[in-house]
Image (cartoon, rainbow, N blue to C red; front, side, top):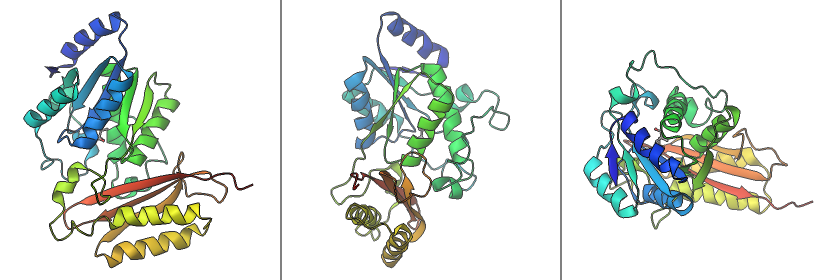
Length: 286
Ligand code: PAF
């Protein structure tokens, strides 16, 4: 695997690959890689000849009180993991390589409405930071395909919408959520969960799954299901950020006749905010 810190270096290497007709896949990450990220790389490898993984802790998507400065940076271990997974190129730019004119005057990509709800409501500006950096990465790498994890469901939906709205010539692929044996979705922020919280924090996944099962069984009282779910999470000792039953594509509150539904939730532990989701497709009950 070759590592590039500059846009020009990476572009030259990729131009040579593209000239040979190679299909290029991109896996954007912020590093601190775990099994779920490696699964994204493997997903990209299954349909692309060349896989580029980017590691960049993007300040533009962190709020002022968030964990940008303490976000784990583990580049050496990450490099070995990517090599073992069969990744071809690592793009690891500096802040000044990505934002040479600084953050304040950086041009931005805005995807309205969808980014104001759910995670966007408690993290103002977050998705604008994501769509901006992802657009830059798309322009730098010009991938045929880019792979994102389903765990960040709203991020995936926003990026899909952005690529569609702005006619970006890239296929957006979703990779399944990787879970610990008790159901907890793998995340770089799981490192912030305390030993006391760890045995009960899977209440988030269990609650979302329970709601999905109830909807599958025909329950259509979405607001009651959301209310009961919130109580269950609170009873386990966590503050709920949101719990919402949504249309899988638009993320608007689900309507009775929606067939593709995603149940999304976020809770606060003492030192982290964790998110998860469960999607379901309802058979036509005609
Ligand atoms: O999901 C992430 O790790 C980040 O939001 C992404 C897509 C790499 C953009 O910085």
